[in-house]
Amino acid sequence: TLRFTATDAEGKLTEDALLDARVCDCCQTSAALTTDGLVVAYRDRSGKEIRDISVVRFSRGRWTEPRPLSVDDWEIHGCPVNGPPVSADGRRVAVAWFTAAKDTPIVKVIFSGDSGATFGQAIRVDDGTPVGRVDVLMLSDGSALVCWLERTAKGGEIKLRRVRPEGSLDSSLTVAESGVARASGFPQIARSGNNVVVAWTEPGAQSRIRTASVRIGSTK
Image 1 (cartoon, rainbow, N blue to C red):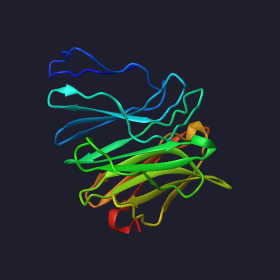
Image 2 (image 1 turned 135 degrees about the vertical axis):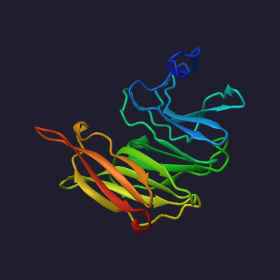
Image 3 (image 1 turned 135 degrees about the horizontal axis):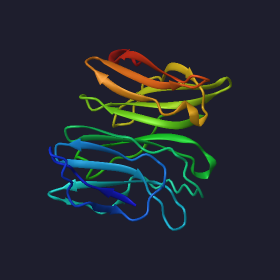
Image 4 (image 1 turned 60 degrees about the vertical axis):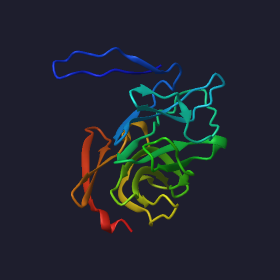
């Protein structure tokens, strides 16, 4: 199940709320705060093991019913451990995710201009052989940066690409080489002024966290 609760400054919890009674067991859940309230993105799970992405919102003092973000129709009898991130700036929202429906791995991003009440068309952002492990960062100009792992002949690469709501894509940027095994973890991105900081796990006998800084204007 997907549930929600809140805590005040003294640590007192509110009554928890059931948001969805059946979800993917291990895929990460993500939440973002918009001007109009919370948006939560997660991998849903139907009785027929369709594991597509859904969203719920907290608006006007109540939670909305879950609804599919995009009908990929990915049937998989086990959790892919590849959840969706969501990012918001004011009323603008971006959600990115990985799917392998019909045995075709794809990374997608989708935009909303009304705090997640409605979304446009999904946009493919990968370079053809993605592993997923996605993160997304909404920018103040309405575009978004999407980060993911791409499979290569040598292993994998951490990729970064700027996407705009109308569907235009900048060229992808290779941030670093990486593995694609579970130990490679999930690269994360965060904004610091005019830079984006990318952090990822470098697997090995002694795993280390690596970081790189990229100027937002240089992602083309």
